[in-house]
Length: 115
Length: 110
Image 1 (cartoon, helix red, strand yellow):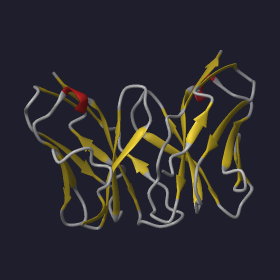
Image 2 (image 1 turned 90 degrees about the vertical axis):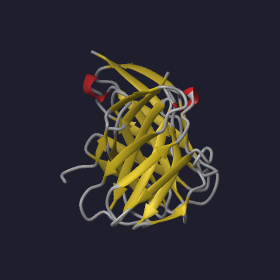
Image 3 (image 1 turned 60 degrees about the horizontal axis):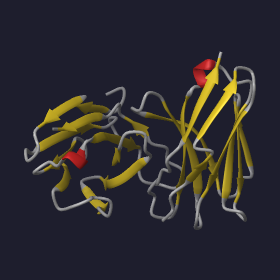
Image 4 (image 1 turned 180 degrees about the vertical axis):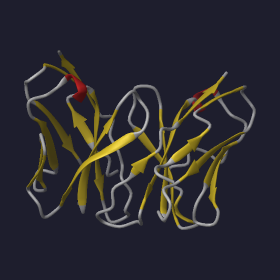
């Protein structure tokens, strides 16, 4: 596609429910990143993929968070048993590859609200 | 961590003035990137400066890098109301991750 697409753009859920957030990167981009941004804060790194592999999962806050990427394209971030502190904007970005001089292209994010 | 830390946290200037934002980081980097964010959603890449570069220009943007001081600055000249946004620096080390700081919120008053 023309840009990084994320869906849904907004998600309201009840505490304890599971949610799935989707990211569709720019066609041909092999690297994909997930970040989280709480209100008025900076970006918190969660995980990145090179192809279908996730070399670095160090940013996932707990075992309730998981992510997968299939076919080297679409990625899904799943949050199980959501908590109120999970409320944030979840941002996805892609780049042509992982490399020293690659820049990231960001989607518009998913605003997650846990009631 | 390799997180960039921006300073100041917030900056308010008059249209036409220059805006300078600073960034510090902790360890060796391969490059440092600056991004802009409007309305708390997606970020847009502004400029990348490599570790062997000291200064780079792009339109009204000027970025400097001082690896000995582990710092960078972003200068926006002749600011416009449309420049109002949050600006983030993101150092990249050999792990290829970009770690963002909390950003500088810039307000340009018409």
